[in-house]
Length: 247
Ligand code: GLP
Image (cartoon, rainbow, N blue to C red; front, side, top):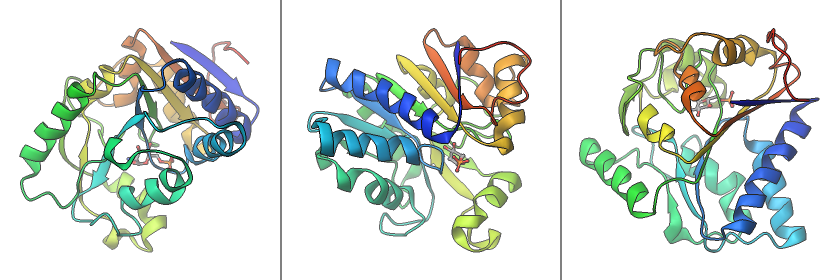
């Protein structure tokens, strides 16, 4: 696992964008796994800039998002559908038919999760998966205790995650209790993983992810097992690491 420590959030976003852009240039029809949350926003901003100023072409790119809240329709301002279109997709030349995000209003969630896995397989698998990290070490909505081999499914959100996300909803009561999420096994099938972390609030999660033992109680620790995983953390997020890492 490669750990890159950057000066700040801006630099973290730029280093990540460079990697994503290099892949798109090398393989224009690549498959990207995308994340929501505040962490990847800078990456998306930089990719939008590269599209507008340098003609980075997304027309053949396929994307799969990690997760979505159950019960929120795509037009709900806190849905991850809305987030992705507002913050990224509507600013680039992505083909709508190649965008996949789990559907929070699916009638048969189990069937939908199976279908989602099938679409990933049909697309040839994910080339590069972008990840954020929860303060408790969760990835996507795989909360502590999630099976390390899990596939796309419905998960109950922990109190901590609902608290962390309450800032977007106004109050914790409005945060959905369930989400559809790619499983840890699904994430680990990606050919490459890029995990981003910024700020003091993530310092402990990054320390145990990089230097702790692999455990389902900290789902992000599984990334240690991935043959091509990079963590890009800014100085604050890396502040509890005891090892020396690439600057
Ligand atoms: C949510 C998302 C995760 C994300 C996490 C951290 O729980 N499901 O994919 O990594 O939030 O979000 P932020 O980047 O806003 O700290």
